[in-house]
Structure formats: structure tokens, C-alpha cells
Image 1 (cartoon, helix red, strand yellow):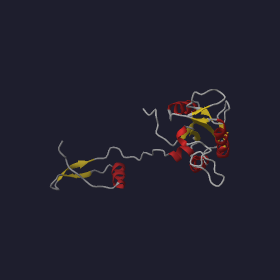
Image 2 (spheres, rainbow, N blue to C red):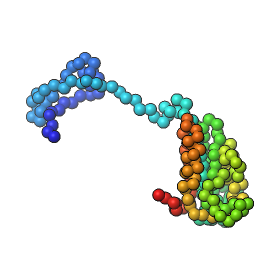
Image 3 (cartoon, one colour):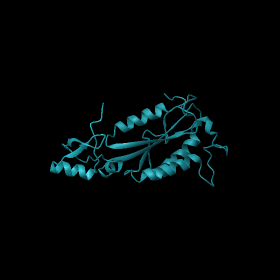
Image 4 (cartoon, rainbow, N blue to C red):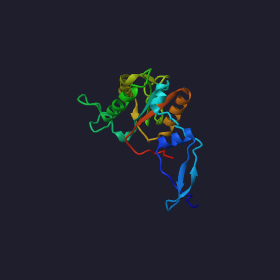
Length: 200
């Protein structure tokens, strides 16, 4: 469609024109007066930010799922991403601490649902499981970052690394958990080393 004309103004001018019912002069492409524009409505719409939701009482819940697939390397191997070096934390521990420490500041109860995937449980059989409670308890929640790290260390001693790297069961399980707490914003942290094999 053809341009009818133009005018320049600031937001303050728009507000003022609306309040005082003062028109703007519309000019054509040659700069000649073409007509007038009246502002029927002018308002500021505030869209709440994530911080606004937090101030309004929204709770954050951090959920963590850790990759126990064989591609990480056996935990006893110093080259493994799961190797527990007394001198320094492994990459999984560093990831948990760097992200977890930030999010825990906004998590009021400090309880973390912790999971793993891609391992076999010797107590059950050779079939890999793609979603298990890290603490091996009916309730997957652990107390804070330290509770998560403790459960992670115990899980490394109990479970056997397997595969493949499937995320679907973890995402579905945490989704169900999140849906049961409608006033909570759940953040799922999946820590993995390899290519996802069930990406859709």
C-alpha cells in the first residue's frame, strides 16, 4: 500500500497528544502538510520479568539428572569424567556446583530431586535404566548441593555405567514432577558427555 505521510515524535509527545487531544501534523513525501493524526490510545504495558515472578512468590526448584553411560569412562580410570580425584573435583561435580550454587539462592526449601540415566543396577539385573533416583530411595529429593554430591558419589559406587544416552525418560519424569507443583518453576539440569541417542 502507499504511504499516507509521516511525522516524528517522542514517546512523551505521544502521551501528551493523547491526554490533550492534540493532533500531529501529517506530511507527505514532499514535506507538505497532508492531514492530521489524533492519538486515540497511548499507554505503557508492563510485561513482568522472571525476577518479578520471583518477587511475587514463584518458587524455583532445581532438578538434576546425571549421565551414567559408559562413554564417560569407568570411574576408577583417571581419564574418566566420573573419576573422583581427591585433589580436585571432576567435571560433573564442577558443573553441579557452578550451576547449583546460583540456583540454590532462589530455592527456598533447598531440596533437589536428583536422578541418573544410562546405567545398570546390579540389584535388579543387566537391563539399562534410563531414569533412576540417584539416592536409590522412593523419594528422589536430596538436601542441597552437598546432599546431591553425596548421592552422586554413592551412586557411582553402586551403579554400573552402560548406555545409551537417552533423555526422554528423564524429561518425562521431571515433567510429571513439575506438573504436580504448579506454583513452582522447575529447572532441569542434565549433565552429559555424549551425543543424545533419542533426540526427536
